[in-house]
Length: 492
Image 1 (spheres, rainbow, N blue to C red):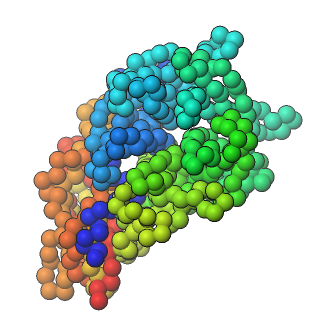
Image 2 (image 1 turned 180 degrees about the vertical axis):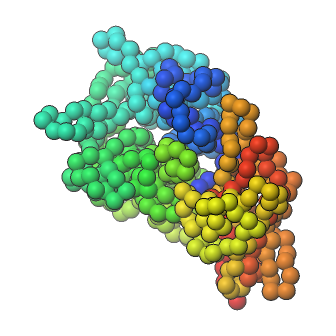
Image 3 (image 1 turned 180 degrees about the horizontal axis):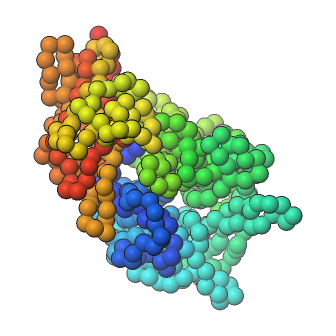
């Protein structure tokens, strides 16, 4: 049963090819979307990659993923993503897109409005949004929504100083746009949601929600399902594991009547490799299903270094959104594989087998011991010695398991875009020891596709140990492993 099912699975953080460069700190100085070409100034951290703040559109039986830092990724089956480089390429942060009159409207963080004939562009700049008084404006963390009656809306993050207090108050504003000239704002701003950390613990800043007065509430996304409008937002801070998404809803209109649902937060996971689950969206998928896409806090090289995850969403008897299986860090079925995943289950039932084991490495640099490859933390990593040209990492599973999937989160030491040291394919293989001999489980020695997080499935083999062997990596990079996980079930 498992062998048939596991090939139709994905695992968080998502295995996205060609993950873009993280360019926080100097991206903000660029006006509008842009092609990378400007030089970073006063950036002290080393180079890194990042992908976050996803808007996902399920259109014409394809998934279109639009994250911060670069666009776009397309999938027909949700297992295999293809990077389609758009023009312009980099939306800075928080891109959003909607179909409009046979075309597609897009905007992003403090960017003008763009239009394209296809979901992957090229995107033509229409200009900044126009307020009723004629002034031009761009928005922080915008979201666009088109209702069934053709009316258009844009939503954005805003901040106000609290009188006689020492903090700022975050809120969500909404605007209605002209259906024929979507740059023009015809109504708004309307205040829809206001930060209330004194009432809602998930809005309190800090890993342990210790700041009872403040927490970022940002990253709005609006979705309509069965006549109800859902306003999904992120809190309290994208830099740590308390990041989550929560929901307001309205049965009145896209600009009124929003109340905080009781079943909050929607996505929440404070520890492990899938740490934090904020700023994203909820999108309709096949068979009437709903899926949450969210930002994972990684923070290995830079505080804004992030990855993306996704999980099944459903609606309870009160019309409130929730994730029936929570935020997951084990293999799950891809959208469309099961007709009713809310009731049938959405997992092949595999367990992580290498977490908190103490693996043996063929070598290790000081402070980069092998145990860091299996400590389920994105802040640590195993790094072999420079002279170790075929590094190995061996994990004792302490029992006999049927092993059928692996996920590797690579550390790319020495990455330097400006000097031509670029990411690329990692080449490796994984073996399993069956008590008598080592057998090949996964052979990626000829890999040519670039995966910073690499999730692979394979035919089930009985193993008491597993071994990862690195055989090749991009020139100038010295490889490390942030996390090595294999998945399986106990052998009968």
